[in-house]
Length: 120
Image (cartoon, helix red, strand yellow):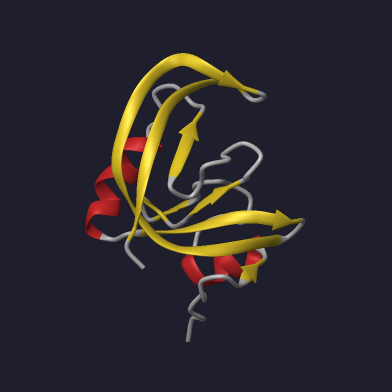
């Protein structure tokens, strides 16, 4: 029986992979053609989980996340320390705005600002 995450609790990437599937090493791991969860670092996404910044132009995962999250909200985790990621709940994409790489942060250009809706 798979463990169910609790909002506010922290889990290692391996525990997350055991619960949701996918890789413990990616921010948007996939399994069976679906994104299993989303992981964000607060220093790169200071408004997460409400608004996230997507740094990859034409990322094929973004349309998958948008479609999939409407049917099945996606678990979201924020990094709190090494191997400690806080479970924030299940979210769906409210809207994704193409900002065309105009904005930048320490990681480089931001291509999309994505508003997330908590549906936990």
